[in-house]
Amino acid sequence: MTTTIDESEIAKFQAMAAEWWDPNGKFKPLHMLNPCRLDYITTQIAGEFDRDLTADAPFNGLRILDIGCGGGLLCEPMARLGATVVGVDAAERNIPVARTHAEQSGLDIDYRHTSAEALIEAGEPPFDAILNMEVVEHVADPQAYLKACHDLLRPGGLMTCSTINRNPKSYVMAIIGAEHVMRWLPKGTHEWSKFITPDELYDLLRNAGMDPVDRTGFVFNPLTWTWRLSDRDLAVNYVTTSLRPE
Image (tube, rainbow, N blue to C red):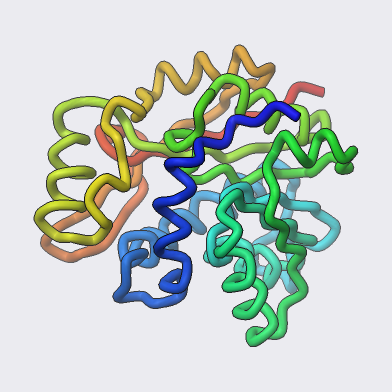
């Protein structure tokens, strides 16, 4: 079986697995970013599938895959919105953490230690939406990985894909700032050379057979310690939405 898993990248997240649900632990940046991520993701899915986010269980009937699910920070909100959720992660230690937290929260989420390529080989039925957040910069072959994601979507399906831009500002903010100054993440969590510019990601998505329809920035305010969405500032963290053509 071919795979795009980078074992050295997986080892970094294996070492931090127990801290996924500690808002002041090594995943503090994701806990801070999560409301902003969820705002974007839910708005995109609701718009594409004509769902009313004010209704009870608005994602009922949708099958959603979260690749690189970690401890389930995105899976659980999707399940609460009514979706049938599959969460997969290549870091084996993340899965029992995610399962235990979901059980404690009374949520039925299908967590698996596997990869996108393995799901395809096993004949996994297609998904309506894929959450592909902060993963593509950690894989060995981004193009092959995104093609696998495309193959896991049904025609008309939607994928959100976030990553970090590659420029001097992202080096200062995401590596020097987050890893060395603020110590939000262990040193070496990210490699600047693996960051992907928005134009590069759009090209990768198109080459994978996807149709990119949106890109938006996640912008951190160091004065208020909050994140916001921006359609102009994609200098560091950003997210895209793309569709698999019908």
